Amino acid sequence: MTESAIREAIFKGLKKIAPEVNPGDLAPGENLREALDIDSFDFLNLLIGFHDSLGVDIPESDYGKLTTLDAMVSYLSQRVT
Amino acid sequence: MAEYTMPSLGADMEEGTVIEWNIKPGDHVRRGDIIGVVRTEKADVDMEVWEDAVVDRILAKPGETLPVGAVLAIFRGETEAKQPAPPPSEAKPAAPEEVEHIHASPLAQRIAKELGLDLNRIHGTGPHGAITQADVENAAKAGEKPAPEKAPPTAAAEAGLPERTAADVQAGMRRAIAAAMARSNREIPHYYLETRINMDRALRFLEAENQKRSVHDRLLIAVVLIKAVAKALNEVPELNGYWKDDRLQPQESIHIGLAISLRQGGLVIPAIHDADTKSLDELMQAMSDLITRARTGRLRTSELTDGTITITHLGDLGVETVYGVIYPPQVALIGFGRIIDSPWAENGMLGIRPVLTATIAGDHRATDGHRGAQFLTTLNRLLQEPEKL
Picture 1: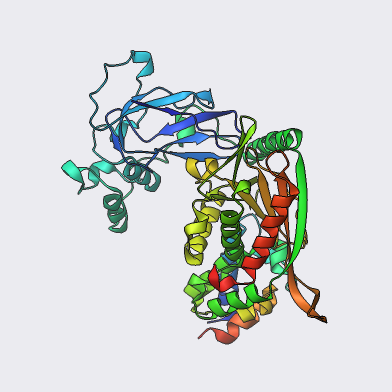
Picture 2 (picture 1 turned 180 degrees about the vertical axis):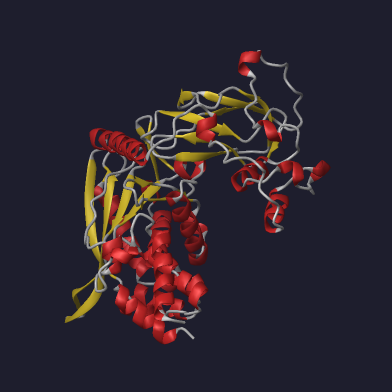
């Protein structure tokens, strides 16, 4: 899967949580949860979406590696088959 | 005969507007069925029935705004004889025309309407050929085409009500919150207590639990806190109840209201019923369902009327301590802040622990600080043995 496809999957998940936001406007290094006001419940649902759409099961211990858009793309790119 | 009245969906509600009915005279309804929608300042809320019955009369027309307690409809027991026909002005059935001669449960009618399916084209498998929820869902899966109509008018439009803009909803939300919170501060002499809780064991328990689970089944710390609060209330029941008629009225059932913030601003406080008897998995499921429906405007009347205490959890933000405002007629509100790694002295040793500040806002008419302190002590003890929750 290409990086742009992964980015698209992330944007789709983020739009579901924050439909009023254009994820494309996010700075690559911006803290996603703070910028989009994503709470624990929304974050878990985002990860469930990644599991279902990309087949990646993210352990709780890796949550800290998913703080920014760039970090999320990088993390998922390494794990998507 | 039983009267179905305009429900009071919280301290902030004085009146509501009937948006739509999913029933008509003669319909059989089951406990928990959604029979219509009522609009409050905050949201459109599904109206439920509390027992199996037959619809005798519908008195409130869609579009009518009525005070809390006004009779909206009359139900009769399934074995009761039908009453004489009411005067025509009162007996206007409000069910949509297209389903008037079709036997379908109210829920099935509603789902079909939402999916744009024509009930005439769905085969009913219920009693006497009635169309059930499952029939509608099966028809949807089988690709039953939506009814060949233009986009149907919304229920509000059908009721002659103007569509609310986001600004209208936001303004109504603020008015409702203002009314409830002003009443709380005016009437309730609050006292506040707080305690710092070492969450090391609770977090390790949660981590171990979640390692065993797929992402779909993971638990959030919020459900551990909800369960601990519910169990603590079993030991300090005076905090679980209402102040009504100048006296404390403790409630046997523990229905935990959750303050849920909405993206567009404002908050709602639906309740998880019988939280003390639910497992952590059941609480997670109930909380997920409640948050999802709160944020999509699909809450039910019972969820907004039954809360016996409220939890405000602002742990996702940087807030360390929450001093809440009690939601009347409840008599306590529990606040949780963020879990923060902090210096912690234990057995003469100083270390770093994940620490949560828990607060209680108590109604001093109902309880004293002593009870509040007992509650926080109990809560702390329970969170040190998370595996027993």
